[in-house]
Length: 103
Image 1 (cartoon, rainbow, N blue to C red):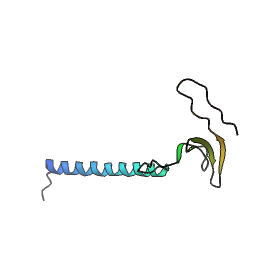
Image 2 (image 1 turned 60 degrees about the vertical axis):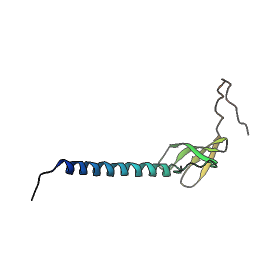
Image 3 (image 1 turned 45 degrees about the horizontal axis):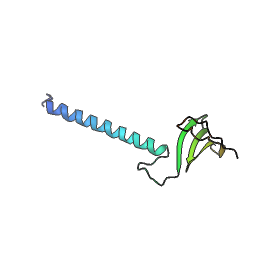
Image 4 (image 1 turned 135 degrees about the vertical axis):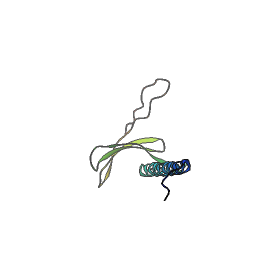
């Protein structure tokens, strides 16, 4: 039995290792994209987007959601979702103050 490894054997094992690690990283990236509510292919007609998520407990989180051109802060638990407040619009580039949304 020949136990000598040639350069071709080493290259084949190295290529296989890199391929498996690359596939694992691609799978993890895909799962992360799907878990965050995003889709793999961006749709131009998408009206609802999750901008940010903050976990505040084991089953509670706060989410900043954009619906069309409005941003809304939502509290999420295992049983319900509650609108906390509308989020103020982002400041203008010309230095004007924030617009206030009053109900």
